[in-house]
Structure formats: structure tokens, C-alpha cells
Image (cartoon, rainbow, N blue to C red):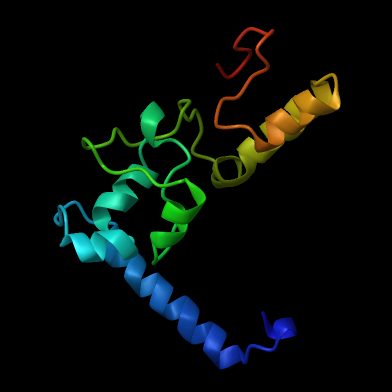
Amino acid sequence: MPLLGFAPWTIYIAFSVNLVYQFFIHTETVDKLPRAVELVMNTPSHHRVHHGNDPEYLDKNYGGILIVWDRLFGTFAEERHRPRYGLTTPVDTHNVFRLQYGEYANMIADVRAARGLRVKLGHVFGPPGWRPADTPCGRRG
């Protein structure tokens, strides 16, 4: 951002505001807010969806502060029921590096083993747990 001309202090303020806002949206105490707020802002209800592993909630509600971007780009999902939190596959480690970077290693292994550009791209840009249609679920299915 500094290369684009933003002063360092403005970046610091923006990141600080975003970090403080994250405390608010990570609560179970707040249910729904007034409709006008829910249309524009990321709310606890929207953010619960982001952390859900229910199929209808996967890859949804990425907005940090504004949910309007998810609405515009088709990644928005309304909270219809309380999500089941978690990942699509169980975690079998407490190693912080494997937790943080393990899925990247899995994706690299999938791409290396894949035959054809379309399948390689599917492993990188497909939804969580994506597999080619003509293969079994594989090691993580």
C-alpha cells in the first residue's frame, strides 16, 4: 500500500480499526441487527456463516467490515440456521505450522499429482474438498 501512495499512518489506522471491529463480529451474544445495518456491514450473524462448515455456508461472507462486497460478488449467504463451526476435514495436529500452512502443502501435492491443466487449476481455485469428477474422494475426502 505504501507503493500506491498511502501514508504509513493511514495504513496503521485502517488495520487498527479492522482489528477492533473483528472483536465485535466474533460474538455469539448478538443475533441479528437492524436490516439497514445487515445490508451493508459485516455483522456477527454474517460472520458466523463465514466460520461454518455447512455445505451452504462454505466459501461465503469474506468481508472484514463491509458485507456489501460479498453481496456484489455473489459470495454472500444469509444465516438461515446456526452454523456448525469447523473445517471440512478433521484436524489431526496441534503443530501451529501445520495448522497454518498444511493445507498449502496438501494443495501443492494435489497439483503435482494432477494430470492436465484443468485439474491442476481445480485444485487451486476449486471449493474446499474439490476433486475431479472421475476420481474417488482421495486421501482427504
